[in-house]
Image (cartoon, rainbow, N blue to C red; front, side, top):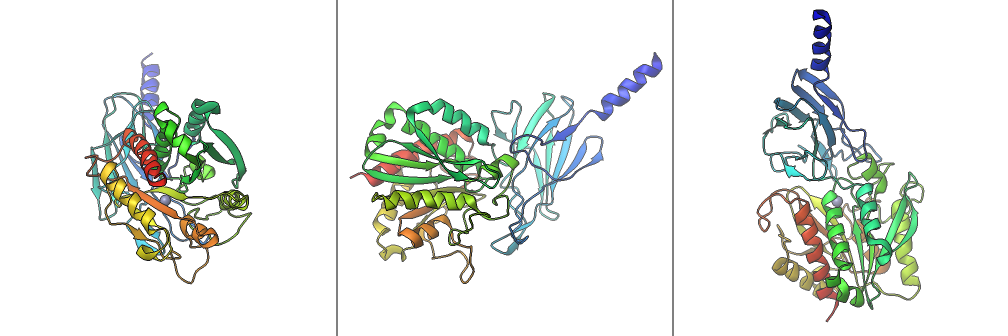
Amino acid sequence: MRFLVGVLLALSARAEVKISWNFEGGNLGRVERVAANHWRAHLAGETDQDGRNRQANWYSFQVDATPNQALMIDLVSIPGEYNYSPNRGAVNAETPPVISFDNKTWAHLETFEYDAAEPRMRLKVTPKTKRFWIAHVPPYTNRHLAALRQWAGDRLSEETVGQSVDKRPIVLWTIGNGPRTAWLFFRQHSWETGSSWVGEGLVRHLLSDAGRPLREQITWKIYPMCDPDGVARGGVRFNKFGYDLNRNWDVNGVEKMPEITAQRAAIRVWLAAGRTIDFVLSLHNTETSEYLEGPPDGGGAGKHAALAERLFALLEKETTFAPTRKLFYAASTTTAGMAGRMTVSQGLYKDFGLPAFIMEQRISRQPKIGRRPLVADRLRFGREFAVTIGKVLTP
Ligand SMILES: [Zn+2]
């Protein structure tokens, strides 16, 4: 009997902590045990098609632990590269993780220590429950999108314009039937879940009673999930073959980047039928900057400048958008002299002359919201964003 009790205790001591990420959007690299309640978790990160531009700012994992026991998890292997310049990584004191005890509601974990020297993000958690979840920002997966689609029912129409590398559908949603047309891209980069939460807020507002004038004035064409593969595997910013889906808009790689090919083809078909596109925007997240980048049409003297200025002024005055820099206009490419370096707005301007914008929203503390944005803030901005686009496109 005494022996049996000893075995059970030993077993339970070993089963104390389990870190796992085998679910949609889950991602982490190697995990090492440092001490009984101290773990070292390497971020997996991803590189592009040439093994460059490593970025390691998506992680999402589940922890099974003993309630009321202090636990320490060090996130390491953070440094990377952006547009070919090395950096210390995007996980730092400005961007602590979010934590959830029900896998549904998320709040920022405030008990962390960031050590810039390694760099290392040390998380300290004493859970009250036996299971919790940690992620860089609140997850939004294909499952969330399917739930939104189901909620919308036949109030929106969905077409499949192509397939991802892994044969997931690239869907295009249409809401409303107004004379003006806005074409929106969400989630070109899989780590940027804030983009999807804003998209959800926008769709919910458009389909509400209050959204009726917006449906009557504008035809909304929405790509709600530009990189379904990356979102499913818990990727960072590249498709399965390593192609950045917000670069490469100047090349045509049907096999290597079918997502871009499909998205652009649907726009070409729309325009070829004699219809117009009055506005294009792709929504993104960054760690600490927030801005609106106008179309690459020559800047303040360009033909889309009035639209750009009105949009920026309204966003700044009437919404929670809190820009860290003034409106500016994109150059014709992100990297001169190199193929595969045009963003969606640069590519659509080159091909069709469209008024195409990029917006970035930060995940760090934001002055208008007064904290690091959470799901409710993104949903709210989605509503504000729909209203603002309505004002910009209708007289
Ligand atoms: Zn992005």
